Image 1 (spheres, rainbow, N blue to C red):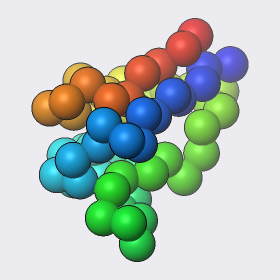
Image 2 (image 1 turned 90 degrees about the vertical axis):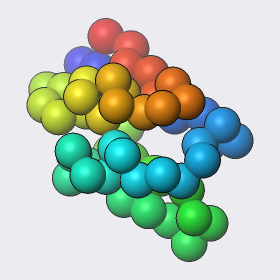
Image 3 (image 1 turned 135 degrees about the vertical axis):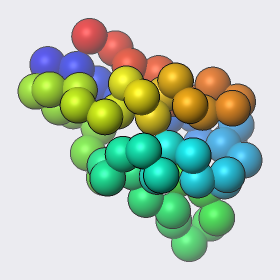
Image 4 (image 1 turned 180 degrees about the vertical axis):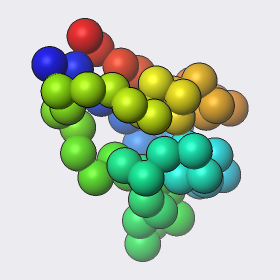
Length: 61
């Protein structure tokens, strides 16, 4: 099982992750948040981590 670690404090709210992966959404705080943090399959979450300009999304396998 893979786990998503998201450092919300570092998020700049650009929305790049939400553009490439439907597991990500913008919250009322103007920052991105994962809908699920523990996943059987990474799917597009790996791409979401790769496109994040500040590197605040980490995948732990």
